[in-house]
Length: 346
Image 1 (cartoon, rainbow, N blue to C red):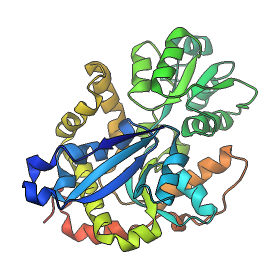
Image 2: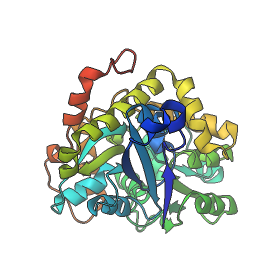
Image 3: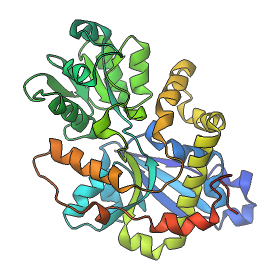
Image 4: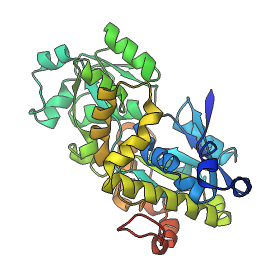
């Protein structure tokens, strides 16, 4: 199942003359979900940065996750995948020439929340050592979106790092997306779950306990983790260099706005979560804000942590040079045309 969202179509008239709007370059982005993982793209949309670059960006949301979204890119049904680089690492290890070319979120965007009673029984609080908080998973039923998903991998990673066996010491339950997760949590069918804001934020507002603040780099093994990136086929990047540069320039402007004027950026994002309670949205925004970079430059360490993360929880280890998985060529090409002080094209 997939859902199509036109990112700039409704904005073109506001920023460009009608005749010029017809000349916009169409770009299709494949998302594996919706949420705060894509805030820089939402900001670029609402602020008109895509339209200013002459782009008409359409987003296709693949409910079956990252592998399905990247498959659309490999099959030329989409131009770029926006999601976890680990998915691209696996594809690259199997001979698919894909590369990450812009950072969108540079801290782990998901975390784990458990119900307050389970936290009390385990004797954990925000003041507890990280290892003790992860051990609170023992004996619980923890929801994930699906087997092998990022949420599943995170729970397994935290458990193993805390000395737990994720297949024996607690129960991992595939639940699906946010509505199903919150319903199961509120009904007591699960004791906790792994997901991103604002779903985790909603559970916290209902008395849940967030095990650790990954967005702030509180958990050192995942601090600086490249969680969301723009990823495309190498042949698309080489034959659509100008378009890729326009995408990166728009994202760069958005990321600078988030870093320099977070309140203005927050108001740009709010319409995408119109049905989310204002208090929950504000809390989710505050929790997520540290996870967005000031520029789209990709750091090698963030990619290395994707590979280490995969190898810690998957049975098929990856032995791949991280340098093969990403490129800063597009970012470098755009850098001279962008003021890092004003976040605008010179």
